[in-house]
Length: 563
Image 1 (cartoon, one colour):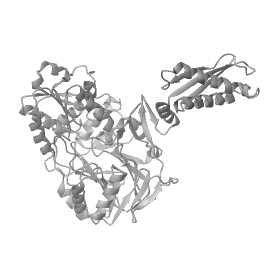
Image 2 (tube, rainbow, N blue to C red):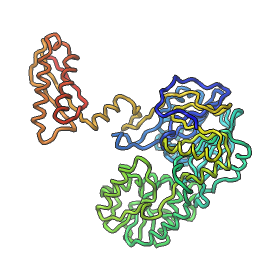
Image 3 (cartoon, rainbow, N blue to C red):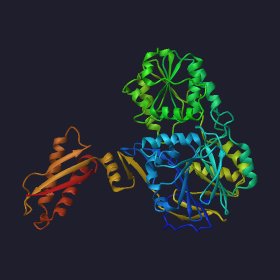
Image 4 (cartoon, one colour):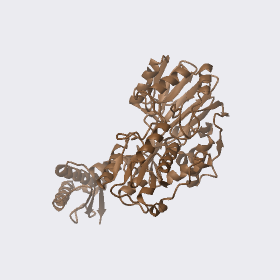
């Protein structure tokens, strides 16, 4: 196994030579989410996917974040296009936010294009973005890249692997995938195309690592449908199913479970309706009766309704979270009702999901997860499927992506066990030469993350965001010092402290103000004439005093007023 160690020192970036095919991930390697992959060849760049991740407790005020595209924005005139493998948020979610900086054509299959148009319409960009629909299994050319899509299976319609062919190398970029013999919605994996590609010869396979630590196979949607039908039949009151909105097969299975037991189905959550519309536009929910709106739920008795809800990951403004908090305008769950979490826990969401499930349980609502019943299968390949892919493709080099460090390393080891001659474990920012041989990391570029903070797109490594984090953990304090022009204190310092203190707040505030007064009076006459010296002395005094009383050093600002 070759590659670069995590945490290494960044080098100054250099451009690849025109005769080299290089791979440059700016997001999605060493992490799950915010995928952004670049391929460079012949003085041109091609992007594959442009996704987001979701914020957690370490990112106060930030609900979503994405890879910083600065490297390719600086070379926008060389960017020939963006190819989207499928319509999951971690692959398309950043497009409405970042496309204005890129302004390139987008290539997608019909279902993905439908989802993308809805998102771009909400962002007011639909008439600006050129979306080129590519048929399933289509071949097309973008700049110097000859591309072919290979249909695979995943937890969403129309997932595609991308074959990139250049004179120096052929690459299989798998996207997200698994081998599901009965996906229920959409085609099965195109095994004939994979076999043909393996016989043609592949230099590098760049592939999904999410389940590289899991034995066996991911499992089939058909088995989940049968299990859900049996499970829903156990209950007499309202049933709500939380699942990923993009899993159209799961929506269809929930509808089948409802119909088997005489229930009607309502969709609760905007993203579910967006996916439902895209699915019907492309013929994927044929035979499924129209879903009810959430405001129609109250018209039915408790044993006649099944609701499919957003929020299986505990997202703050999702339907399930609002229902659990009894804050939803149309939907109410009572003791004796049931919520089925037909989804997996995305790493990082454990706390939010736990809070949601506990909140439901405290209200007497039964919670069913994959720990209690078979209600979910993953959309990503487990180890047996990965091994089968390597047996079919037989690449010269394996380069794992879409996973945390332990997933990438496990994937690389499995590839070695499958007799792949070379494996490379890279990280975001590594520029990997894929051809001509030898395949290796040749450079490293700076990477970063951008977050949606209110209405603004901000660097998460910025000083202002670090200050917010410090305020979250240590509070904030503001001191006002009033002096005359000769440096004499004209009044006791005034203090405002946020996020700290307790029952003895008045005593602490008094002690901190006295500490500020002492330190200012201890300054020399010349020092008290300099605002910056007074400001820094007072700031240090506040932090030291609060550290002594609370063990915290708050973010502190000092206003010096001269009269």
